[in-house]
Every structure is written in C-alpha cells, then in structure tokens.
Image (cartoon, rainbow, N blue to C red; front, top):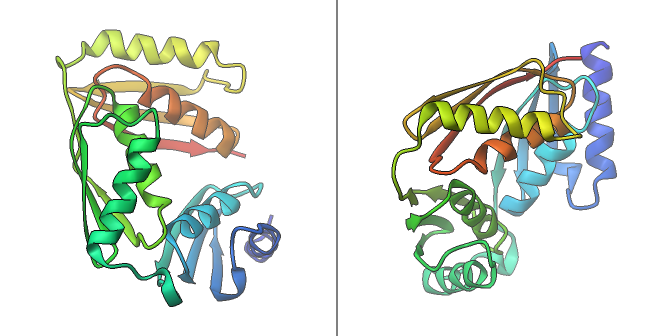
Length: 216
C-alpha cells in the first residue's frame, strides 16, 4: 500500500469515528508510520484518534502529536477538576483508595500506591476521561516484593499462549526489576493490545516497555 493510500484510509477512519472531530486533524504517512497533528477538545478524543488510526490495515506505528485545547466551558478550576478526578477514581472498583490526585491548569498528577500494575494503569485511564483533563502524569508506586524475573517471564508467556486472540509465537518477554519489556511481532494492533494487557496483569509490574512491532 502506498503512503497516499494509507494516509487516505486513516483519514477516512477518523471521519468514520463518531468520537473524533476530524476536521482539525492532519494525517501524514511514511513507510507505515502515521503522524497525527492538529487539535482536539479532550484527552479522551486524542486517545480515540490514535485508536482509530491503529485500526487501519498497514499502520505500523502512530505518532500522536495532537494538542488538547479545551473548548468553552471545558476549562476547569483546579479544585473542581481534582474533585471530579477523585470522584471518578473512587467510583471505579479497580482503582484502590490509596491513589491520590492533584490538578493544575488541566494537568493531573496521580500519586500514592497500588498493589498491582493494572491498578496504576486503570487510574491513569480513568483520570484521562474526566472532562477538563489535558494530560495525566502517573507517579503511582507499585508496592510488594520485587517479582522474580523468571516467574514473571514464564507467567506472561503462558498467558500469551492461553489467549485465543493472540498468536504469541513471535513474542518475547524480558524482565528487569519491576519492568517488563515486550519484543517481537504480531499481526494486528488488536493482538498488540492483548499482549500489553497480559503483561500489565503480572504481579509486581511497575512498567511495561512496549517494543512490539505490527507486521503485515
């Protein structure tokens, strides 16, 4: 597929996605790498634009350079925004009460502790969906003993093999402390997301370095 065809397909997918206002988004394509530039009205919309681009066949990577510019009444006072973020975190059963939030000029910083990496990841996702949030900085610390590298590697690899949505024969897992690195290739972004989610489910994981390539 040519760069022009890929760019056109991504633009069409953005137009098709009702959660994205594509009029202010410019798309560039080069050797399977898509770059998104322009402005969107929320952090959630920025995420949805990236997800839409990744759904297009032939896309190997999305460089999301979209700026979040709050429109009209979406701009919030720091105290009100912090309160809404804390409320959203409290209502999500996956987020522990030990996670705190601060807000300044639309930027939210998460702090505190969690027992699992997926809880830390969930808190970032939830905070980013609150109206008025421009970006989220995640400083939540994962507690508990540092996991055994071999156990985590084998556990994640076994989870890959059990997953009917994932062809894991070309994936490799490496661990260093609380950091998991995923390498190799998959056939689609759907498989990529399944692999990353499985890695976050491992006990004691603080960070997942995603070096997976989508090969067509």
